[in-house]
Length: 515
Ligand code: IDC
Image (cartoon, rainbow, N blue to C red; front, side, top):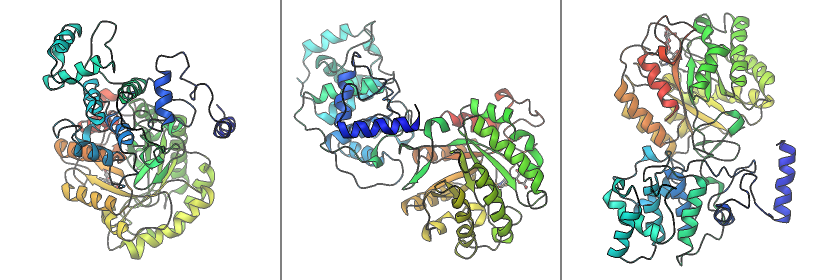
């Protein structure tokens, strides 16, 4: 649908109230029509700005628990930092809806299994039931064909739900305890269960801050998520849902520019990535000495990413030239040109200084540099997302958190290499988030900080779990076939690479796209 027409329809709906189905993909003849209508009227689970409800999308732990929390306790919450649903999850845990061994942060954005949805609903809504009614138990034990696959601690809860008419089995009589639940099914389970309790529904719709992420929570390209913005510490899509970008960085475009062409970008997108970073070195034979050839390679990469529906990070790759102030005028010229050329695209994210290092400080060098570059970009692209590095190879973002930039839609980068940077740097992220500083990992490696050594798989997993728990976007270094462990493609495999010729590090990075 054209944006203009959609806007007209939304205004129309707001002024005249909604008749018939509120959603283009929920017909009034659908079995779930009434449940969805009831849930969305109460602001418990809403549709998307494009007018759809997407009834068949899977619902995650975080989304499901947030809906229940909104129902029983619609207060705005404490604004806990970290995962968007943390406050609801903690509320649920504190209220005894689940036990410590059942849900951890790593599961928040994964599909909730049916048995868990049943338990949470029953405990949240405190559904009246007849305790240990043997007759009922025996009846359903026989009726539910796969009763044996339901873990003991959930069996009675499932029976109660059947007996209360909250759910039924599939056409073969199976409960399928481990299957996911669709948004439509979630509406049915909760609204039916809620109809039997005396607990009143939320009067006011939930605030956008607490709305669940779009769709499956963490994926989707530009056509799905649209223009990005930063809300609190979260990266959000055009509807205010949380977005986690995952993808690959190129190596230096002056050396491995061949991996920044449409074919390699397309293969990366096909593997599930939704962001691509173009590392345009300033020194070491990069932009400062070869601006025209660097721009050709860069623009070719941007065009490829746009064609593949990906977000694309334009990285001014300060490295051996530690202080970004040393080339601030060239940076102004460059960012003016690139933002004038691409400012109308929702795809572009600007990273204005890869890794300041040497004797630079945040308040004395990098912040003043950012204060010069950001307005240049904003003249052409007023509300784009801009990533800002910090001293010590973008590890001093805590200093930025203590002395933040006064602009909207800014995120601070954290760069980590699993063989060198461990828990202490994760703790620093936790600190920055607690101060309200949004963090974006625009470079991470499974190697040590020199791009080699390892692969450090275990520490990488600890990092990725942490990033997942905090909804932090990340980009892996690097998509090239150089003979170093951080290279994602096996040494010498060339641009003919496929997911079968990934290195050990590449495997870890590409597997992460689907997490
Ligand atoms: C490394 C490359 C390596 C190259 C070196 C110097 O992997 O092949 O010789 O740069 O140009 C960073 C930098 C990134 C580094 C990477 C690994 O942003 O340019 O690439 N790294 O050392 N920060 C931390 C690690």
